[in-house]
Length: 280
Image (cartoon, rainbow, N blue to C red; front, side, top):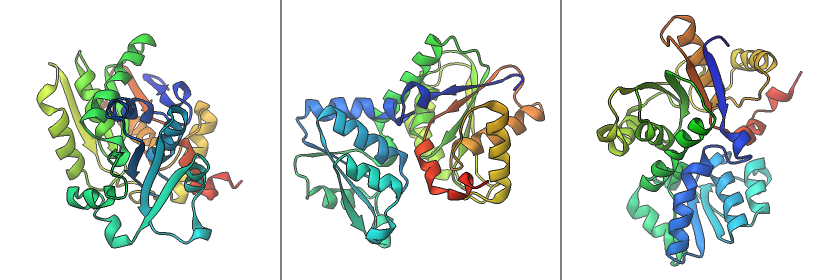
């Protein structure tokens, strides 16, 4: 990949990826407040819940999560995994799950855990953003060279941390997993826009090429197989593969001159949600 290199966060933090950075400050804060249970929300294939269950188990916390209701026979491999690490699951109706960002509704959910500590979906909070700034320290240690950074974006916390942590000119391209980027723009503006170093710029690219969030059409499967064989690392279709697609396209048309670094933020466990990827 001429002019394009990849930095693999999940190789540094197996099973955790960018969540290792985002969750660390919240777990320290929870411990300082003597919280017993870490509580969060997420989807059936949530990388966030997967990482939270791992870290909670390792660090002596109980963990609990609210997810959208599914039949017991339809539990995803991710939810089965988090249960094996003793995460308590509570199921919400579809309409209640849509309220997962409503502070009043979260307060209702937390009544079950009066000594609990709530972590927002994706680990994205002021603390999560400060943790994501630590990614830049690992890039320095690795002596990574780049003029541009490209990374996948979910809730926006990792990108906000990257933008805040950059201390030299760099253009950051966030590749949204969603068709719309309004909420992500608002979140990034809240957490980072007023704290950018001179020469740091950014843009958000919506996911419009492959069908939107969690879509994995045959064309993406074919491209993933080609990229994995060519570049020698695994991808998942929700975040990483789409970010790589945008990076390659922008490089090809000259939109990212110089050295470009793609942040492979992890989430490979979610690949299991797409059995067609394992088919020959």
